[in-house]
Image (cartoon, rainbow, N blue to C red; front, top):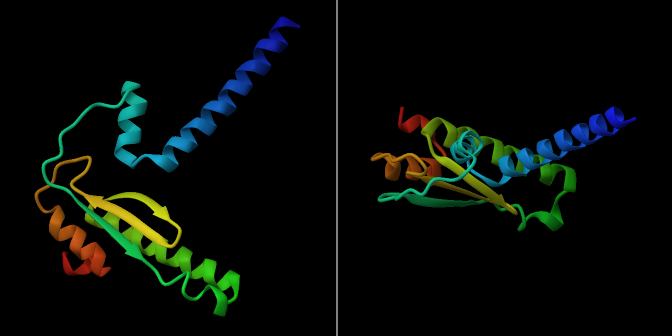
Length: 130
């Protein structure tokens, strides 16, 4: 009986840990997640040169005129495209906010070329840089 209770609580803890890990994965940039999981705490760091970029689609402008499924498809394509752009350029995706996409260069890893990379991401054409 005691063994069953322990097994059940262990399973519950595993499920809750997975939920917590998923929440962190959605909230924190990738490299900060890894640091947090490895060390158990966030390290302080100083950032000298960084840029933030907000990319905004016309999703809300077209809401009333377009089928909801088509809108969601377009928004998904927009986010997927910029996910691939920022990944190729080494920029950190911060989050999506409604129909806006937020990313930053120069964090959490220092990088002298991030101003150019952030501009290229804003232009949406990572191939110019290569």
